[in-house]
Structures are given as C-alpha cells and as structure tokens.
Image (cartoon, protein in one colour):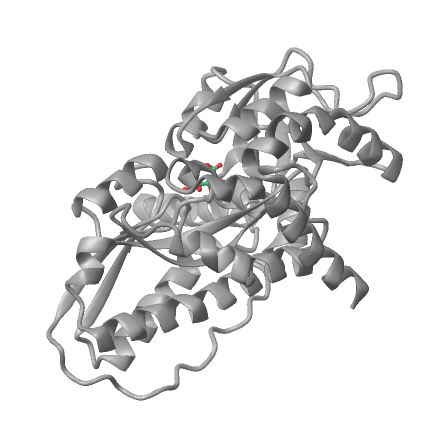
Length: 358
Ligand code: TK8
C-alpha cells in the first residue's frame, strides 16, 4: 500500500511541475522545404563535424539539421554532417581558427568576430544601418555581400552563405533601461555589457557610457550568472533559447544592430570534396540559409512574448527614444565610417533604400 501511495504522490508532483513549466518550446514553425534535386553520383564518403554556438531549439541549429538532411538525401547517405550545438566544440573565434588548421570541418559564427579575416564585414556592425528585415536580407543576398564571402579566399576558410542572426536587443540584470529625455540616447551608464569580440560593438557601448567587455558567447551565461557582467545584447530568440532570461530580469527592444551569421567550411575540407559535392554543399548552404531566415523571423516576436511570460520585464522604445538613441551613436559612424569605407556604406545604403521604395 505504502509503495503505491508514494508512487501516486510522485506522479501528482510531477504533473504539477510539468504544468507549471508548460511553455511551448517553439512557435508554429514552417516545415523545412521539400528536398528535391537529383542524387549526386558517388564521389566517396565524408563525415563532417560542424560546431555552432546556439542551442538545439535555435533557428541556427534547426536549419543546420536541414542542411545535413539535404546532403544526406542527395548523396544517399555518403555525406554526413554532425552538428554540435552550444559552443561545445569552441566559440566563434576558436572555431574559425580550427577551420583554418583543418581540425574542424564547419562552423556558423556571427559576422562580427569574422571581421579579423574580412574587414568589410564590419559594415554589418554599424548601428541602425539596416532598418528592416527585408533590407537586411536584400543586403545579405547582394553582390556586395557575395564579394565579402569571396574575400575569405586564402584565409583557409571557405565562406558559403550569409543567414540571419538578427536584430540585437539589450538585456540586463540591474534595472529597466529607459531613455530619459535629459540623457539623450540609451541610459546604460554604470552597466557592464558583454559585447562580441568586435571593435565597432565596443565603440557603440563606450559611446553610450556603458562598460563594454568583449567575451566569447560560450562564457556569457555563467558570466551573467556570477555577476561578472550585468548585461548583453542578442536577438530575443537567443535570449530565449540560450536561457539568458533565467539570469536577466530586464530587456529593452533596442534593435540597435542587425548582425548576420556566416556558414563556413574549412578550406582543407572543401578542397577534399569532389567538384560535384562542392556544388551540392554550396546549394544546400543557400537553401538552409533561406530556411534559417524564415525560422528566425517566425521566432522573433514570439520569443519576446515568451520572455515576458517567463517573467522578463521588457520595454519598447518610442520613435523619439529611438531617434535620440540613433543620434547618440553618431560618433560611431564618425569613427568607423572612414575605416570601413564610405563607398561601401553608401552601396549598402542604396540597397536598403531600394527595398524601402518597393
Ligand atoms: C553564437 C554567436 C552568438 C552571437 C554572440 O556562436 O556572440 O553574441 O550573437 O549568437 O555567434
């Protein structure tokens, strides 16, 4: 009797727990597009390791699994891609170095830490340059952006495609970040903010009066948990899927910069693939990037709502507040514009304007 009684209790306890945590793990996501295209002839077998920074529920992971699925089906299992999430093989900077030495086959870092290889990528780090997702996608699919991928030649890295990391939003554990009129811009004074390892991002937060601390993404959760940093900035989907809301009570919808991801392969791995396989990998990379961008869009607002449900206090900025914020980061353009290249910035702005007039 006792045993049965205890068992019932445990079950009841478990049910309550489950109910209490009844959050959907993902929004209504589009299914991956059907895989068509012919099976590529037998050019040997390859097993590729791909390391990524984000978690299993992220658009980055889901679309990477789709990439793997395309290669698997179109080679009848001869190319296998194993995706390792959560920075378990290294952070963005380390994994790019591993691609160069050939100790890792594939990775999917943000463009921001990749500016050490291709300077021009820093155009994506300029605040408020890409006002809409449509504009951002048009830029990522432009010849200008293709030129940046091609510029990886001779670095030991084959850059395959851009996709969406997304609009970055500020979170912190100290206080709501508002934009009082007398401050002008975002009041982040006194906050220690983790940034990506990228000088433009450092400059943005310095300009705003915060204490920016560049740090690898994989170290970020425990740094916030231990109070080494007060805050960070990433898309809502990452704040959700990497569980940052557990250690960050406040969020502000700043959308201060849109950053892409770049899917990459080690040049050694690339060179070891038959031309037919190379072509297939390139095609699958583009298809999975399209899917990633779609998933990422589906995640965006949904994630913000989920974060609110989980207790995060999130404020949105009024148009006036955004305008003040934009004005406050103008010195970043003055400092970085000439170094990134005014012509390149103008080219990107022209693509943006085209999408706004459509
Ligand atoms: C994941 C990173 C991450 C980026 C960052 O590997 O470092 O904050 O936004 O998503 O690329």
